[in-house]
Image (cartoon, rainbow, N blue to C red; front, side):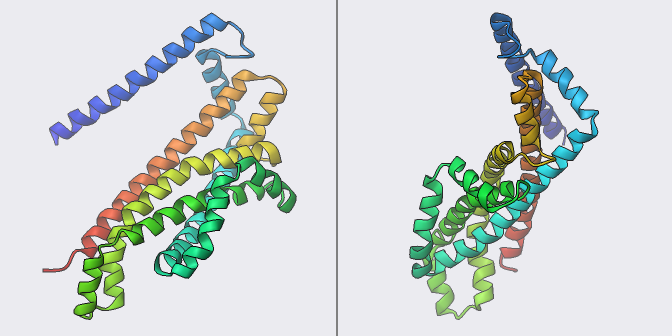
Length: 261
């Protein structure tokens, strides 16, 4: 226990040290540029961030942007798992879905954002973009997880006439779970980026992206950097929370999948 606390403390101190190095570099670059429009100082940005935190509109924007990202990730996960599973177990479904996934991956996000602005309201367009951009990540990982299942285990299960539910639970589930976890973690970062980008263009009433756009219009670099820090922080928090939850879920799933003695 003591060794764990020491290791954890060292990791925290290391991260703080790295953060301080980047802040120092930021301050040095600011000292060289000395143009607040191009690059505000760290002190100015954190001061502006403190002001924003005290405003009601800040929390409304954060809550609505978080809602859009979480809702988009949820829908993308459901669709990715369902269609990824179908593609993994059916060659026809794979042939049907693969060109669509490749097309989504190949098309610039800005093209879909513009289309979404025509199809949906300014509030719903970011959700659609989040679903569209995160779906291929989850679909691909679920498909890969199914394809990586040991075929010898499946053959053995057929020989011993193992129930289909047990095959799913004991063979497929442990194989897919690591790929699913990796997909969700990757999708979080992608979801935040494209959702905020869609908010910048669609300009919904309460949104982080709307405040970024407003800061850009008025050349308010301190606000622009402060809101960017908010996006990064929220993305990291959501990633940490989901990583912790998924790791706990993985541990339970692995224990549950182990054959009882």
